[in-house]
Image 1 (cartoon, helix red, strand yellow):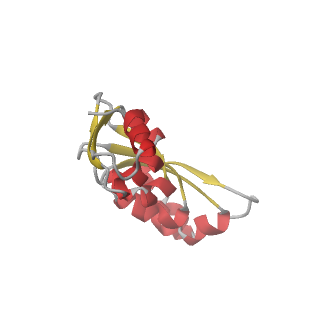
Image 2 (image 1 turned 45 degrees about the horizontal axis):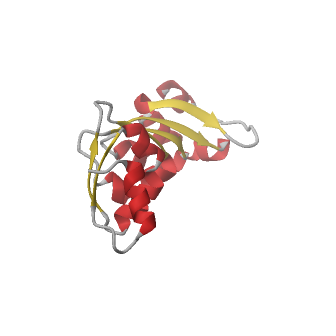
Image 3 (image 1 turned 120 degrees about the vertical axis):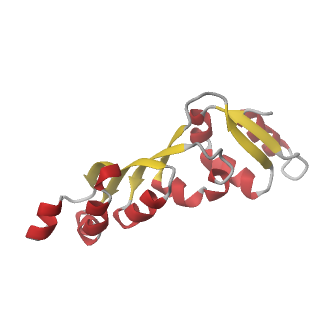
Amino acid sequence: MATVLQAITAFNTNHTGVAKQAITDTAANIAANLDTLNAIAVAGKIASVAFSTTTTTLAITGAQLFKDTAILSLLPSTYKLTVSAVLAQNVASAITNTHTTSITVSDSADNIYANIAAIVTNQAKITTLTETGTIGTVALTAAQYTTT
């Protein structure tokens, strides 16, 4: 068994010669090093991942949700995700992940408007919706407004 830091150190010391690591650490440490752990998983050097505490919720970004699939696939089935900075066009995909418990959406007014149907449909898991960039007008139809 190795902690996240021990596994990263072993991999950085000898990429090809390091044995597969069985990692046990906190959800916070796993989430904080998710990108690096994903690279190690892609290299085939992680045998398993376990949580060292009862907290199994990882706070990650939308980019990590879609990019770090190798390490996420190695997590125990009990893990949960809170996902921040999800683009409006990715709301439905982020919610489709059965481990996702909540998301925050950050995008431009144009992209929010273009994806308003997915946002409204999945609003139960959206904790925050933030317009980024230049503030613009989001025009809604009466039906869209009453649905929200």
